[in-house]
Image 1 (cartoon, rainbow, N blue to C red):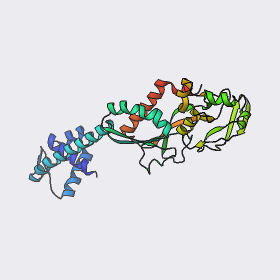
Image 2: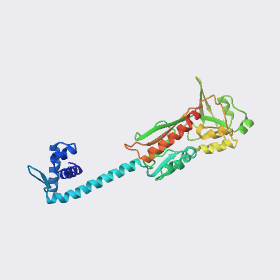
Image 3: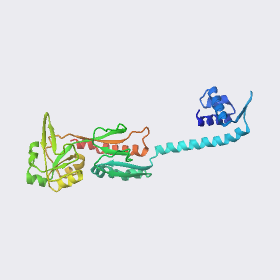
Image 4: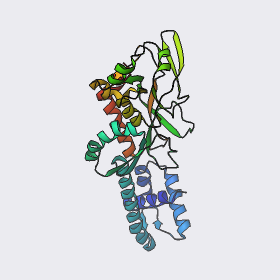
Length: 304
């Protein structure tokens, strides 16, 4: 039997001086209550309660064990209450992984407000364009653009969809002209992200028409911020998710190219280890990020 239950039953009987009243208080049958008491006495090899036809009374050993047992139960309940409170109150180190661009644009801006609201949480941002094994590397959550996870122990929560946009600086377009069809890109300098699948081939669609174009250029990189900076230096046309260059488009530093054609879109997902009870720090940070995206209407902006 459960040792803690045995002690709880014994203490309840002693408090109420009645086996039947203790059974009622514990929502147990009288026979089950009696079995728990008998099991405790047998395990301790001592009689704790003296039974008569009229009343129950504690033996000397029972009186001694009663006080200790009551203290143990109180400590256990206090520990459980503390743990439950900790589960509701976010504390500790939160490790978040995402690409450098996403970290700069959408993680670091929310950190001040988040840590001000939850001062007992410390946030570690891991900026990387490769995907870490979350469990092996102790990462609490990550932002990824792949649609599926090979590890079934990972939970995926959709964050937003974004178009991939072709854009170049006005200076580059004045010097080299503006392409009017995807095939024109073969004559242009392209700045490409080398970690994408088939990175030097772009697949376009427009209505029912599809076009695949092999492209090249003077500079390629594994980081979106380097690609963005290179385009701002007028070295070519980039192909990047809208969320990376939206501010440059709004400011006119970059200009959309072939905007009536669509490249395959990307879905940004929040991923985290599947757990029966997600730590409060992770759950609240996810909610914080999702609310930021909702308030900013980012998906609506990025899919236009």
